[in-house]
Structures are given as C-alpha cells and as structure tokens.
Length: 216
Length: 222
Image 1 (cartoon, helix red, strand yellow):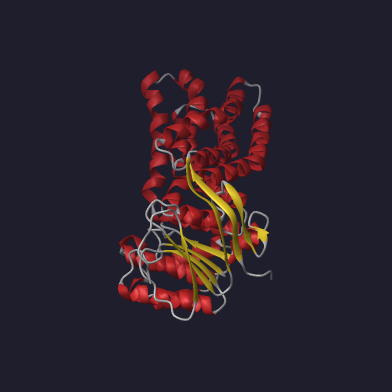
Image 2 (tube, each protein chain N blue to C red):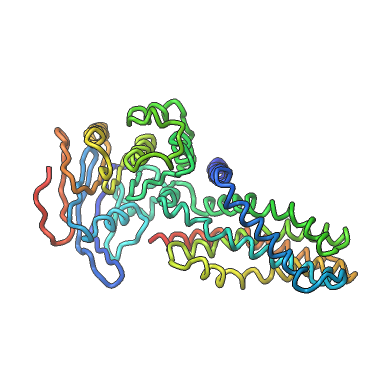
C-alpha cells in the first residue's frame, strides 16, 4: 500500500472562460481533514470534482500516494468516496436496496446485516422498507451517508455533507468524521457550518478571494 | 467484472419493474405508429405487405429512441451516475450493462409484439419469422448506438430532440438491412445476405459502441 497522501500541485481550474483559481497546492495526510471554505461560486465544488477525477484541471496535478490520479485511477477510485450535492439515492428503491445496488456498482459484495445496522445507526430504522421517494430531504441525505460509511473508503470527499441534516445528525456526522480520521482516514470537506472536531488535525483552505468569517 | 455487469443489469431491471408506466409507453408507441399506416394508406393487402417490413422497422427505431433519452438522464439527475463513474470498475462495462438492460426492457417486448403487427400488415408466416430474427439482431444495435447519443446529449436542454437527430442517421444501416431481409423473403431473393450484414453490424456495434459511449459519458460529466 503506498503512502496515503493526497497532494495537489500548482492546480488551476477554469469554468468556461473564467479562471476560478490557480497555483493551488496542498497536501492531506492520513488522519487529516481539509476544510475547504469560500463563498458561493468561488470554486469549492469545482475543486472537489477535480479531486475526484470527474473533471480535468486546467493546469497542475493531483497525486494519490505520489502518483498522478489518472495513472492509478482504479486504485484511487477504490480508495475514495465522493458525496456530492446530489445524493445518488434512487427514489423508487428503499434504503436497503439503495445500499445493495450502491455496493454492487462499486464492485463489492453487499452485507445486508451490516447495511441495516448502518441505517439504524443513522436513525433510519423506521424507514427501512419505505421507498426513498417518501423520505424527507434529510432522511435521503442520511441514506447517502450510510452508503458512504459502507463503502469503507480511505479518502472521503464530502461536498456540503451537513446540508439538510438536523442537529442530531450534524453531531453524528461530526462523530463519524472524527472516527474516520482517528482510524487513519483522510477527508476533504466543504461546509458553511461550524464543525466541532476535537483531537483531529484540521487544515483550512480558502478558495477564491471572498473573505468569510472564521468557522469552528 | 462479471459481477459488476450483473449488478448494473439487476439494478436497471429492478428500477424498470418499479416504473412500469415508462416501460409501457414505448410499447404502446410502437403499436400506435405501426397501426396508423393501415389507416392512412388504406386496407389493400398487397399494399400493406409491401410497406409492412419498412413501417415496422421504422416504428421500432422510433420507439427505441423514445426511451433512450432516459438511459443515463435519471441517474445523472439524482447523482448516482457520478458514483458509477467513480467506481473502480470500468465505465465500458457500465455502458454495456445499461445498454443490455435497455434492450431487455424495451427491445425484447418489441419482439413479442412485432408478430401480431406483422399479421396486421398481412405478412406471410415466413416473412414474420424473418422479421422477428431481423429485429432480434437489430434491436440490440439500437440500444448500443443509442447509448452513444444518450451519453453525448446528457444534461443538455432539449437533449431528446438532439439525440434523435444524432442517432437516427446511425440507425440507417440497421434499418436498411433489417427491412431488406424481410423484403428479400417477399421478393423471393432470400434474407440471408441482409441478415449476415445485420449480424456483422451488430458485432461491430458491440465492439465499438460501448467505448465511444463511455468516452462521451466522461466528457459530458466534466
């Protein structure tokens, strides 16, 4: 297993004609959280999509364990999980089925017991056999978080993970991120809300040039 | 690898089973388009069996186009497409699995309805058998090539119309060989040549189309 470090070198990102940022460099090691901050439209989501490999950078390079992610794409995608704005939850399926197919699409075997356990931990025990169509926004977000936990990825890339979550779920999310980091995982997250994370290393990265008040 | 293909297939088939309305629309469309022609051109049996093969093939291509816009669009909207592309499994297999599922959901039912419509067009038994066989070879081509168009037009406004304009020209070989095979039976020259070419075209599409569609999908998602 190579060193689990996500590093970014001289990264530039453009959307259409507009340059969002350039010369960005940082490195996230095992046990660290990179908190990406910045105003709306400054390029936080674009940065995260670059990190996943869904989009290509204008210039610069993203490396996983020292190798460019394009070269080690399969290993990288196996080690990484991206939770975007959209949940990736199918409305016609119930939460358990959603997790089963999410696992299948990642090429893993689904463990139903573990899946139900994870959903219960996220407070969805009363919704297990309901189609996700009838769940609330926050509950669907929780199903997506269950998929994140089940994926067992080393690197979490989270785009606004707290959107739509109530205070209990936010607290739970903080616990989950802390557990993940203490177990040697990495995380990159954008958020507009304050995160209470004690005992873990947190780096902050400001995207764009709009100053925002200090969070957390 | 095989398990991944199976997972994609099972997923799409389950989702289709939950939304039977979408599935039925394409079949009804096929029946309606094919049934309009006898009403429009009149009921002479000779005329109907002359135009029957072409009409049924055109109706089948249009019916498949109707459903193709949704091949990736639904997964794109709810974000599951991103997860699929970020899977360690190859995108080509994903596209192949989805095209195969599309064929099972929309192509196979067409095969079941087509003989009945063949009778409506006064086609002889042998011609109906060849029509079935040509559709068996041809409908997977529609799903495979349609995957390219669906990937290219993903996320575009008015993507459905653009998809039609992009993909219909690619369907032309399948249409010519498919309808030609049935015409061959009616004209007495035999269907073998047309069916061989249709089979060759299917092999070509199987080998090339998933790769193009996978590349198009990556471009569309950027």
